Image (tube, rainbow, N blue to C red; front, side, top):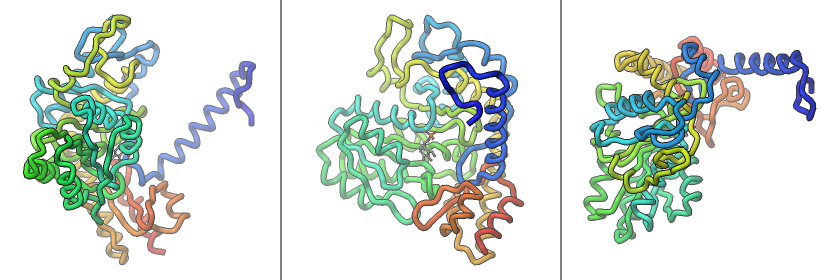
Length: 376
Ligand SMILES: Cc1ncc(COP(=O)(O)O)c(C=O)c1O
């Protein structure tokens, strides 16, 4: 193929040709994507000059670093904003900008394991695949819990399992907006369960990849934050906030992290993060989005997405297709359509269901066309 890599440098025209072709493919694909939760309405051109420098956010954003070309100050502001959204006092909060939701989940589990080395990890079969992988990487003991039809964890099964192992610390991975069905595990109910069973050594990590940026902006949110009893939360940055590069945030309590950090002389930083070198662009992009939208902007964005989701459910139902969604969810679930429809709309099916996620670029005309495709 023209422009493929060999050992000799490629002529500039071939390099450009290859890039142009990829750009065309990406432009075409992004217009008809309804199955994944990425907000594609953004403009970060103001940040382009930073790509001319080798920025690196290595280390703890709350400690000084020998590597001065960083965006730690912006990262701290982003963490502070998330502390407000996720309901923890900023002085009690600690966090950093991750490479995405998966790293945030890994961090939560790592921290839980450092605090409770012999804990059992509990998570539902609906949990994002990253969690099972992370638990395996940690070589931690785990029990997978059944899920309910609606995507929430099966509380009875969880109760029974924790009861049997009451003498062992319990780490619960709750999901705030499951990938496939948008289910929200009831944090307060899980906390009440642990208390009922007198399991005092416990830790709840909330995977709030998408809904961590929805629930803070609705009037009647399900319990989702530190006030509801979570110990750490992971949110993706490239999902609702929208970013051209994957990023995310993990937030936890400062007191926990103080127990795991180590000072690293080489870079003069506190080694509290999972990765060493970290993107400085992720924090800048999130900071820029928060600065541009403000809380009111995000509230409007979320309201619009929820309205579109409700519209989609209505359109499907009118055509006799039993679509549904959870309260405060932009994930619309319906019976799996034929493969050509799945391919056309880049959906993510699972067994006999599929979903669309009404991110800001998903318009009502797109939904009309999609519903017509599914109804054939
Ligand atoms: C519930 C949930 N958790 C975690 C992830 C992984 O996030 P990321 O792709 O940012 O690593 C996803 C991605 O879709 C998700 O839906």
